[in-house]
Amino acid sequence: MAVQPIHRLLVDFVGRDNRPGSVRDCAFDLLRWWRWLRVIQVEWDRATSAEVRDFALWLRAMTKRRTSARTHSAATAGTTNRVGQQGR
Picture (cartoon, rainbow, N blue to C red):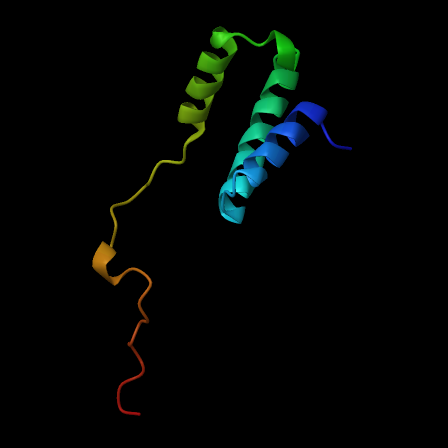
């Protein structure tokens, strides 16, 4: 079941030639917003800046925090680990 206001927004977003990953991210953000409104029992067309503020604060509080420092340099991120490949 499509939610018409979100469907229209996503169709417009796709029509503006946004990348598929951006469209997907936008869709998930809108889903999160829609669910937030349902939890706080506010209709989408009645949401105010107060709901937006509360949603943003909730998102900030839910952001995962790193428990330890990075152990590898960002310069090596995505490279192959050569340990165990020596002597071949």
